[in-house]
Length: 426
Ligand code: DSN
Image 1 (cartoon, rainbow, N blue to C red):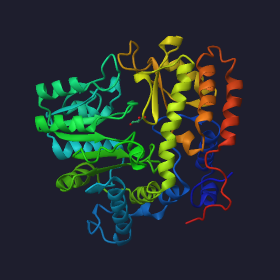
Image 2: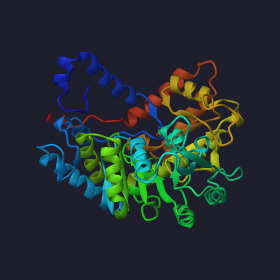
Image 3: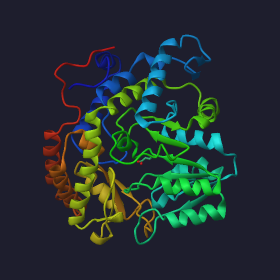
């Protein structure tokens, strides 16, 4: 089996145990439907940069301003990557060093807030994120977090509530974005409120930045002071974080990423981000981003036809949240039943969920990975039929049959198809 990484043969020789894990994971990816909305299959080119000797280099600081010698080569990668990010997003400044989305968010708190300051963000059970003020995260332990949610009738962001809370609490920072928001966000409305109360406006675009890169949905960049994101979701780059911001905030944010929150950057990841941004600037990627949305919409409609109610009535993005109360199945059971049939998705709280998050009344599904595999709307209908079969399969008697359906789909659209020539070792 081909493994997409440099010098796999020597790893196999030196450490067959871990080499085996790499192959097993590739087999897992190829033998199931990957519907986790925050995952994707990055390219062999990105994997080559990730598995390179750039991993060896200490490069604390920024291009041309490092605390170590010998950075002249990695400087080239970071400089190219920063320019590509600025070009791709029309941004005034970019920082590619955050190790993750949570690290990027931590840096923004560090740049603009002091412990005890108030931040206004989307509540986690309504689709927000741990780093937006959850009590179990630094953001809720060290800052005074106030949360807006979704309106009960529309299940979309309650902009009136957000405005009222901003007027009442005068937050230092307002955050838009989250992990389970199926609709596009009205960034202009947030900007207006932030200006009214004198708050910094941060957008956590981790989930949807890939759709922005492909021009498939509106960009938060013109509206926000800072936009943080991960590079591994729809964007399809390496696992990691990044941020783009207005020039006025560049120095504060750079200092907050390093040295305030992080030490040496992962230069192999920075280079891989640069590779990814180049890929994202192509017409092929723009077509991919549009297809991600078309597929998510087709999947959502087909799941609705199977009795699973889409929260907000549908999706504008890459993900959907399905309320399973109407079919009497919990999110937890649905996740487990799908898992045994080779369908990988996650249970998810729905707004105003009567169940605890560990059980949840919903599931979240996303189309980034299956779209990378080349699946289209017709395949989404088939996936919905398989999901519907699996979630109702209480005793597991249908699992094998569903698994065969899954295998037929992924065999027709393999993840990481065999290349005509093996990737060159570095
Ligand atoms: N865990 C990510 C997600 O699945 O959305 C967010 O950090």
